[in-house]
Image (cartoon, rainbow, N blue to C red; front, side, top):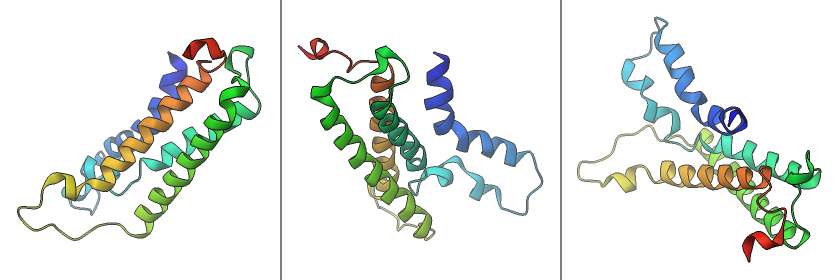
Length: 147
């Protein structure tokens, strides 16, 4: 349980923790800009997904424990999927940093159109964290697991 808290939950919760710390200081920034949504709406969660993907690829290349090894029949697929997720997360994280959305939205624009980058970055982060957890916990160590 401690592994999941430190390796998966902490990188995802780090923006919220830093926001709480920042609100304790008298800053010249309006409090509306320190909203939690502003911290993650432009794909910033994908930075955590990059860490999950690279950690999963590292564990597949050189497993730390005998139970964490990946069955050879799945390793190519998992490596390919985690590499794809790494590239996708990198693109979203970089584009969110370069092209942040600062303009307001017109009235009547549905929420899913306003926060589609947030929704995609949440999905990428969740899939990366889930796959990394399964790889680390040895779910792919035996092909009998999937039969």
